[in-house]
Every structure is written in C-alpha cells, then in structure tokens.
Amino acid sequence: MSDLGPLECVTAYYRDLNTGDPDRVASHFHADAHHYYTRLEPNRSGREIGELTEQGVKFLDASWHLEHAIEQGDEVVIEWTMLWRDPQHDGAKRLDRGTEWFVVRDGLIAEVRAYHHSDAKNRKGDLVGFDHAGRDHTTLERWDGVRERDGAGPGAADRVRP
Image 1 (cartoon, one colour):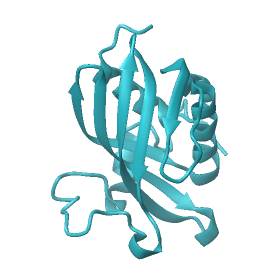
Image 2: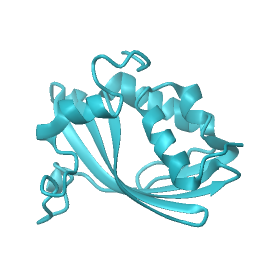
Image 3: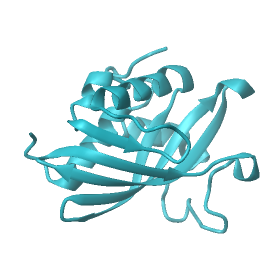
C-alpha cells in the first residue's frame, strides 16, 4: 500500500517506467493488476508489466512521457508519448501517442487500459491537425530535453542499459 493519491501513483509509475527496472515498475501495481492493450494480450501482473517495460528500454531505447492527466476518485486518465528507436529501420527515432485509463486501489495501480495507434498511415503517431509543439507536448525535435527531464537521458544512473 502507498500513501500516494491516484495521480501521484500514476506519475511515480511513469517516472519508474524510464528506468526499465522491472521490480521498480512492478512495485506500483496490485498483485492481481491487469494492463490491457489494443494490440497485445493483457499483462496479468505487475511483474509482467515490469518485464515488458524492461524489454522496451533495452531493445527499443523506449521512454514514456506523461503529457496531461485528469484525476477523479480512484481513476486517472492520461495522455502520453512514447519515444523509441525502430530497430527495423536503423534505429530511426519514432514517437507513439496514446491515452491510458487507470484504476488505483489502496494506493496501487489495479488496472490500466491503454489505447494507442501508430502505423504506416500515420507513422508519426500525432493527432492529425493538432499542434503538439504549441501545447508543449513531446515532439521528436525535443527528444533529448524531454528524455533528460523524465529520467531517460544518457546520464540517468538508474536506467537499464542494453
């Protein structure tokens, strides 16, 4: 159990995602937590969620950035950006965007429902016609600064390395 409120819990989880440490990531979840996706089978424990995160950091140089959040009761909804390198295209910098809905119980995350889209039709992953830079959201042009701010820069001592 944590003394953090729901939004604080989600914010701390997002910070620890960028370490790639499966134990730190798992520590934010109830033992019976589920993480649902639009393109993957669900993760059914904090450990599974942490291990998937570790793989993303090690093999894709992934980092996650919380752009906007709303909290109501035990629920939090966020907009996020994921920066990553595409190993199938010479490590090209990529960006995905999405939203996640969290249920927090007893100070730990009990459920995540993740919605995101990025494919050949919209490789950049941006909302069409939306001014991400103007809203100070993460962009590929801000890659280094955003990663440093959110604990995923080259000097991050606690980040898992490939």
